[in-house]
Length: 90
Image 1 (cartoon, helix red, strand yellow):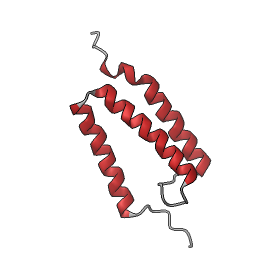
Image 2 (cartoon, helix red, strand yellow):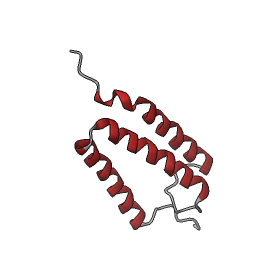
Image 3 (cartoon, rainbow, N blue to C red):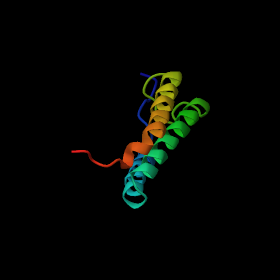
Image 4 (cartoon, helix red, strand yellow):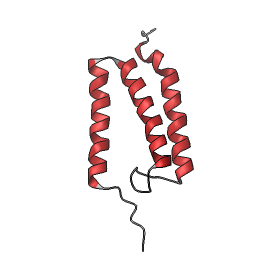
């Protein structure tokens, strides 16, 4: 059976606290800062996925696919962050 694809519990705990920190930042500093932080950390996670050994960063597909997906979505969040504090037009 060979390969163990389940991330280490410490890594899952770190990712959990990362998500909690982004949510807390959204309440403290506002949605724009929170979205920017999320986008920047996703781009950083993509870079880490490219350079760190297998298993250090959670993987879903291949290394290139994971990095491309994280980069594209992170850059999209960074580009759309300004609308995070838009007023309702109802």
